[in-house]
Length: 507
Image (cartoon, rainbow, N blue to C red; front, side):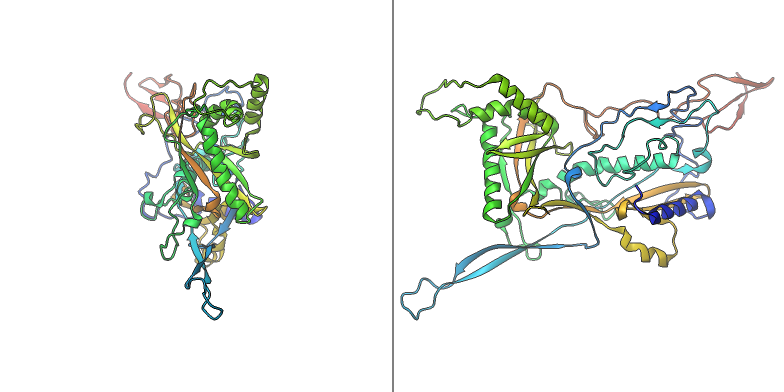
């Protein structure tokens, strides 16, 4: 999480302030002035506050995966960067001359400018207090260790607490709360890489950057004038909700022909625009990949592999079944696909939108539909074709210093800006990020829309809004587990979830 000693020092100062060195009211909130009642792992009322638990705690959270883990990440403070393109050179003016002294035709160059906007997402922790954070039931409550990673190695590079300590996260309540904040950010960002659109902004408090569904598109216009720039258009094809294993009247698999033409078109652009070497990633949802990879070797071997007279059907192919199975296993284990003789990396991404018969009447019951993307990762060898940027809060060091404020600090090399709000001994940590996604070479990107597939079983999802998101369990736990301990002759004492004894009259 922390990259430099300065970040560690800033974090320590901020927590010191949070723990009550000074009294400072919340700006616009009206906090209850008491710690959150749920979400604590240990102590009285903690959902793991049970003496005798095994030390290892296993996370059953499905972690996200996708293209974000493959993209470079850079800092920036430019609100509207401008990227220039030469879109063409064409003749204009006079016709071909009829005499030596007549005016000759001339040529003119045209250019286009593109830009990108920041988004903004903020999250905050539960309300915490140091008194409750350090509490345990008794010596029987042992320290717990998170056995596996809960964020995911292939998760979002903008997830706060990227380098959290699994040995401490269930013991230090502030670290746990910050991790929860990071997961909440991850939930919002993974779909935004594809589906993000500024039209969804809520004032300036929540803003989306343009996702790849918007960036990989046609109808490009100049950022300053709105003039159309078709030379920068991506290649967008439509599969029209055909099943991934659909064949045409000649027995050719449609998915093979469409992906071959998509790849050929983009490779032609890269080669003829002198932007090679170029590397692409073929991106799709994991459910679609499993269906596609199972049929691709046979489909690829049989499609347009033989020519026969018109009207002749029932052509038989001799295909080595063992080799087909080997190819399927190689593709699935290596996450790659051959198209037009070129091998491309496959990236599985949970954030790609998925249609079903509940949100799209074109999808059959029991089936799903989503897009396949061809995203340029690099061009001209090693230049990033698609990359992430973040507003670099390290640029605010002088502003923070001159404001004499210890309530602000940044982490992860300036990606996250944190602040602490408090009311006496209660405190909340808040964080914000301002990221964006840049597709530098949109004319080398493409997608195939609405490919339908019918998996035997849909996979579990990290997305809390998905029908395939599973959780369950307790957010708190009663103590002392329903038992009543006698205190004196006229009353009985119980230990409530805040750990302080109370009395009540009667039975």
